[in-house]
Length: 233
Image (cartoon, rainbow, N blue to C red; front, side):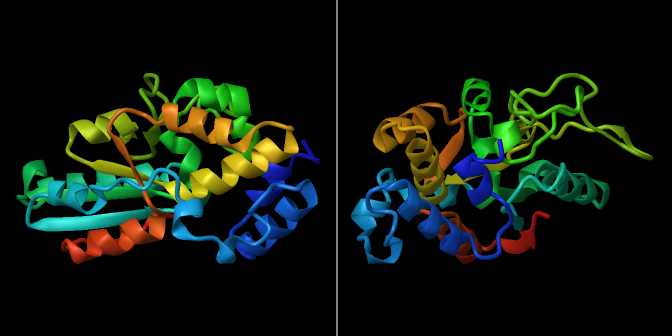
C-alpha cells in the first residue's frame, strides 16, 4: 500500500490541498492540478439545489453541529450520543435537541455503504480498524454495527451506529468536494475514469445522508440555523 496515491493524500490534514495538487499533477488527473482555478460547476458535480432547505430539518431548542474531519476513533459518533444522553439526563428529550454531523475530509468514507469499503479498501487507505477483528475495515463500522462493536469503560455497550443515531433524530451530511477530490485521485492512480468512480460513490451513499456542496459550507449553514459548533475529534 505504500504507493497507493489516495493513502498518501489521506495522510493527515496539514498541507492537504498542496499534497492533492502535487499528487494529481503527477498522476495526470485532468483539472485537479489547478483546483483553485476551477469554477464551482466543475468542482461540484452534485450540489443539491435544496441544500439550504435541508437545514430546516434541524429541530429543537438545543442545537449542535459536530464537525467530523477524520476517523478519530469513535469520537465523531460518540460525541453526538453523549450530547443526547446528557441532555436527556438534565431534562431535555431527544425531540428537543437538534444534532447535525458533517462528514468531511478524511471522514468521508463513513458516508458510504459496505461494498465501497471492500472494493476501494477504505480501511487501509484511511486507517480505520474493524472494531471486532482489529484488521483494516472492509465494512463501514458505523453502519448497522454488530452487537458489541462499541463499548465504553464505565458505560458499557453504546448505540453509536449511524443508523442508531439517525433513529434518535441526528442528521448526517457528506462533503461533495471531498468526495470529488478523493474519488478522482484514486481513479487516477488506478487508471479508472474519475467520473465513473465518483458516480459509483454517489450511488453508494448511505440512506438518509445528504450530500452537500462542501463540509465547510455545511458547518457554516448549520451555525446560521442556530447550531453551536463542536469539533468531533
